[in-house]
Amino acid sequence: MMKPIKFIQQNSTYATDQPEYLPLSAHKSSDGIVTTCWKLSPLERIKILIFGKIWWQTMTFNKPLQPQRPNIDKPI
Image (cartoon, one colour):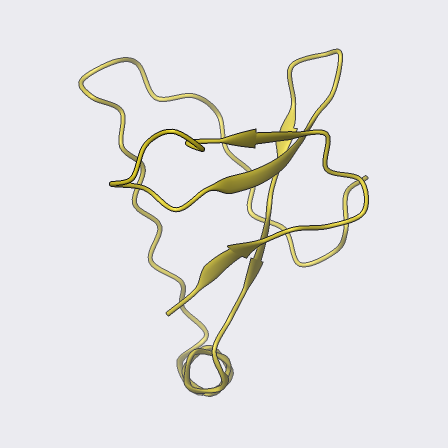
């Protein structure tokens, strides 16, 4: 299963006191952009290579959806 991972530029962590969620290491910039990094399992890597698809779910809790931008290159 894909998991969020720590990275050098991270400066915050979300959900540290929420046991129902995995802690989410992040870099928060002054302009409001939050960057996270995820590690894929070997099987997930193979599936992406073969099918070329990633399904993306966002929990909005019925609030407006924020703009999102998946990336394969490190944006920070």
